[in-house]
Image (cartoon, rainbow, N blue to C red; front, side):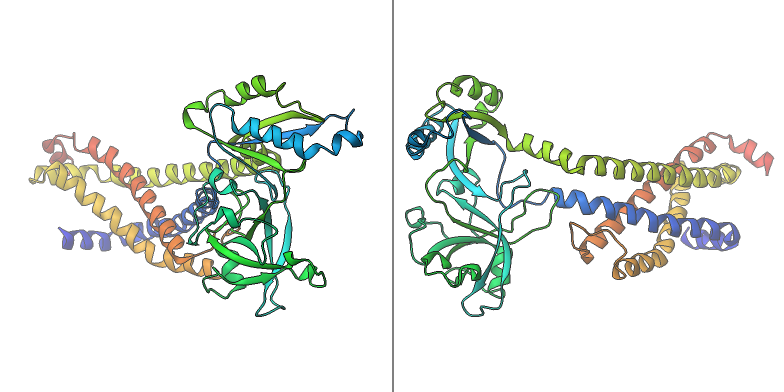
Length: 414
């Protein structure tokens, strides 16, 4: 059958060449579309390096009428400690922490540079978070190497203990395991304060500020005592999640009104992400991009479906004749499917060459994901599979209808 198939494809080469050219062009365009979607969707599914699921952000504020009361504000640390303990003891709260610096899904970022003591000219900029010891439990941060020691997590420790992301560790220490290494902040080089010396306690997974960002260098430092600019985050047990925000606001609005402070708002990090994506225009951009790609793929579907539908329908007498000569329906159907697959595979040879050159020429969209060859292979194979399914549909329906023709009528027509 294979020999007969190749002979027939050669005999119909003038008709096949146009289908072949169409398949090459469509395969390149389809690969580019899938690669574009991959750039965003693969990035969105990458781990941020910390877990925000079931975590809520609690915001406190100062009553405007009391913010200038120096006597009251002098006891702010005591009031905040009372508030923090009440939050920790609230029903459904698994763990609570406080932190400031780079806040997820807000655009509020803190950024500084650090250099290893072995090379003071090698300064690497990174995002900073000052966190309480419980932060690593709330956000479920698990070191890749080293270990977190809560009893040593103190800003007065010398050298000050820090945790840093894998990205920052690799950049500072040239790919060495950063645990036990030291670094300093060159911006405070002339200061006599001990916080200019840091020792890496543990290395964490790669971090990013939100799903639609690349991995960036991150460093964690011990937080000073709780102050009004800290964010308080709580991890809530799963069975308390439904309605937690409403219950917390209702139950704690009065209880947390201590001294000059009051409960301003509480939001889950999931809600903060949605609001941030809308504010940044990410949702509109992705919806528009995907709508255009979907319309394009739909047009490819109609075009290729029509091409193979017409091609198979044109051969319906041949299909019926093959059945009259003893071929089963499955054999006939397999014959035409194999013909379509061979055309697709032969079109993939120049198409993969064109696509590879487009990637090497930096013509793909890789704002979030690197243009790796693994990504290229995945997207190209996906494009081929999708096009193969379209070809299968284009052959199946007209072939099935042609198989209903009586063999005697087909022989009479011939």
